[in-house]
Length: 114
Length: 111
Image (cartoon, rainbow over all chains, first blue to last red):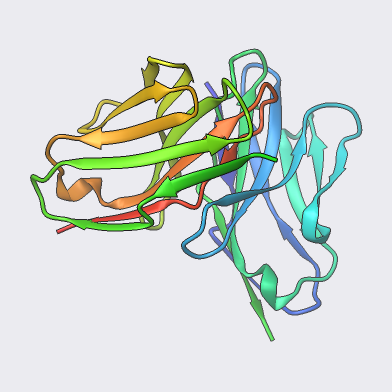
């Protein structure tokens, strides 16, 4: 079975500051990794994904994430946040070879302050 | 391009009433389809998924059921709603690749 732990339930940060949202996972098989963003009362939007290849992946809105296999982590980063980045962010994993099921973390609320 | 629709957007229903939420996908064929529930302050819980017409897998025992009468249509139902059924319901679809794409969601309040 797989599990995902998002280490911070809320992250407050000032506008134009850098931010890191942490995600650790547990799995007995190899996984694909994803970050999604959810704005209030909306569905989830795919930010970025790691399927294979380079461990540093770039996504939309200036976000990037790095897959660290030894630490089973997939932390999300942005060098300079905007007010519009205020949202909830979900890390998710999908076990390879087991269909397209996703296992989600509990989410991290990013609050960007001016 | 592909588009996923959900309706209604919001719904207020009394306890004991029936439920029907609909999800449709455009621009693709034979997608995998998923229903999730997101309770307030909690993550996403996978309720059902379907790999084809008439093929439904349930992830957790509950008061809900799902059906897939057409290739790109996924319906979530209940015969009698409970207070605990309140939440934000999200439909998602997936192509052959592992990522999933989500609809706009339905906010259900059971009173």
